[in-house]
Length: 367
Figure 1 (cartoon, rainbow, N blue to C red):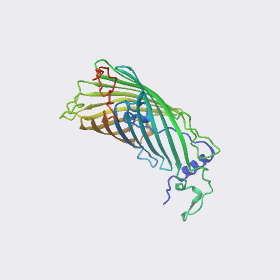
Figure 2: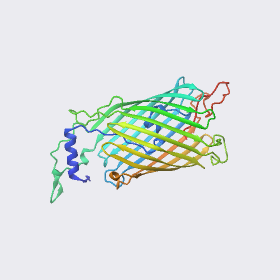
Figure 3: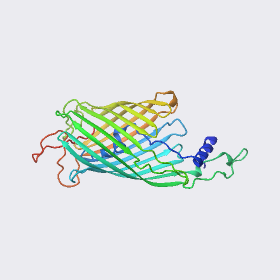
């Protein structure tokens, strides 16, 4: 059954698709620290071991044109390969509007690790993806298809676009610094990345170019540990005796004239996460919201833990009131210290002397 929603608006959309290029911004995740590879490929393999991350977001659920996105990444730190930070897999899927335009991106990322000091490292990462973008043209219903008496019985005179499906490559680069104070209780990560480096053409119309706008990202976060951790060992408390951790952070993005900022914090105690972020974005007007987040960490064993996170965006500005905000969930499975072959020298968070008499480089699993 064809979808009939807001016929004049859809007809106008069809006219736009036939005359001018369509440009927009990438989907954004409120829990950006739970989807780090999405924002910076230099995060690939930043901590030793294997991590699988899944995120799903439903934005503006009270409207008939809500935006739904989902994201999956898998990355592993490969310290036994010279110069290697790690490698990863990234998959992102989103529906625009009521699903008439869909995007699927599948990519690989690779990072190079540059130890600078025992408590300071640099990583540089690259990402290469293949993007599929398609439009469900047959789901559109235009006003010239409708009869006042019999409904949808005519064939529209509006011609479909030349290409209803596009494939194109896409690339991104990034770098970051991770540092730690001598006491080992404060860790910071600062980075910058650029996505859609070559601004690939995503137009459905062969005579019109629609370059995907380049995106620039800057980020900074800290982890403050108020005591000594125990969950890295086979602790019977399964992390309940771990000290309080506080993780403030800031994310800035610029793409196609749109600026967005997220600033806030998250904290962990008794395996429970609680926090909040203030979010602001500006194109022609400024939209603001407050994201509240809660979650739970289950320690399966000394080096394996599972984290579930839920967040909700509360609209603050008038221009997004009544949209229903946004729901987002994240699931993270972390196998800390897992290695491919041989012995992983870099397996500790503190800058201590390793078994081979050499100083270990910073190796902290993020929050």
